[in-house]
Image (cartoon, rainbow, N blue to C red; front, side, top):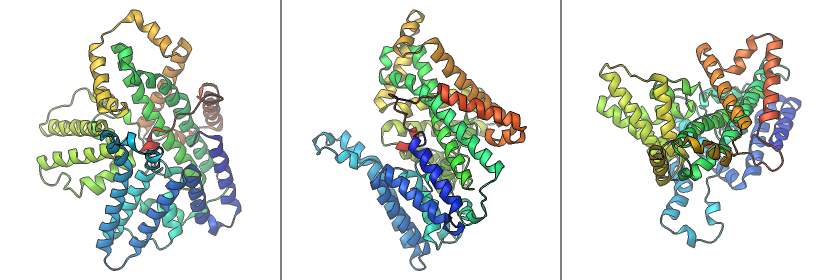
Length: 469
């Protein structure tokens, strides 16, 4: 979505209307723009979004039988998510999908953004029921909270106490705010760099390796797993940074979904840095209600495994996603037990990165069986240095292409290292620099995107990975 010229035109028109039209229209304009974009991408998704938004708004305002309505709507939301996410998978596993009329499975495909705004709706209703937040009376505000177009498709999963006050302060957003617009522009440039220069270029190599792992030796399979580890990060973080930049244009600050996750020194630390809005949502609305760490070590470990099981199932319907989630649960439990015993965890950042990279194999593979075959081949194929040149040619990896890939990874890693030490994100960090330094960063990112980005005639931009969830 973000990598199309159509979206940039849409963004420009929306921003122009936002600052030209009367200020009191701004929430309604953003809601209308969000619905328009959703309908343009998928009319069916717009119908589901409207249904969820209206139900959430009305139940939030309910005075009587609020608990019953809450349980009913949350149950319907979970059922809706399960219907779209698991029905096609079950039909395929049962062998029924081949007997269905053509086009049925396409109509059962997940509506865009459903997983993300459903979690927002559930969190909002739970908070209102517990008295943590007041019910929002205006549908314009609540609808925009759920549908705001930069975050609609792949999050971040926002909280109402952070997002709604910003919507109600839109009248104070000024057109010319050099600091805000500079930050917005940098977020978007950095996101496009991560997506188009790094993630999409890595995808060209990763896809054929995972499609036919038996073709390659252990070196290239290990390289494929490591490349995918960087691809999914640059893809999803790239989306999140573009979304944050888009939000900044309208004076709305979205949640920082990534905090240099591959700088983590442990699995717990990793999940404090990776997809922050989801991990914090699962903590507050699942882990803590289950008892968290308040009921002993055994219960804590069980709760951890339950949360990661749900996390895996949220991401996909295959067994491979469940295994991916349980692997992270297993990592987390082992880490907890080691710390409980007072032992020092060895390996630190390197061990965490390798453990995460191994789990990503199950996330990327088309099925659990495909993931097992990949791992088995990776461990048994051996190393054939004499064939590496042929493998590189098979993957269209010439020296220049390999140099661009490695340079992109090094740039991303270096920026993460710098920002991790300074506890600040790159777009904010460069605002403290002189104009010449800031403009140099703009120029270098623009040139990198134009020269090394994957786009143009005959090239189909890779869909953002998390759009399918």
